[in-house]
Length: 216
Figure: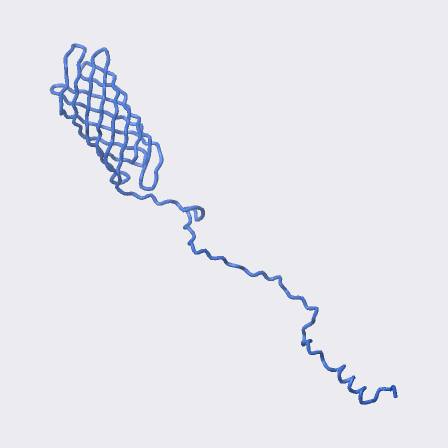
């Protein structure tokens, strides 16, 4: 009575031969997932990258804008004043107000005041002129133009010379040492600043050295 019937034994064999539903052909439970491949993540910015510099990398070079702009400057002068046989020591101050048309060319007015004195006499001089000026390489400048001046002086013979609204010639040349920003230069200037004054029957010459500052 305890023996299994032949029919039941056949049923157990059929169950044992059925494949497991969770097993799939060619796939093992012990199979490992290959996660060695890395996914590249690209981060995009909403701001465009700046253009490269002259060497192809680094910060871009600023564009220097060549445009018309206001210019101004001031200089202290020291030198001499010579009229006929009289020689005087001279010092003074000169201003510059005008326009820089392009980097290489500007024009400006030159108000000035000078005093000279020595054992041979004395002179006081005020003037205003107009000078067109050429600048090369942001370094060397040269300009010349007319001046109107008034002067009063006395020589060692106590002869008085001078007058108002007289004509003079002006020369200015020298070097600028400073920095250049977009569309503008700021520099200390070392210049030869010469004047030739034309009196009635006399000529005065004033060679001076001028140290100043200019924004142009």
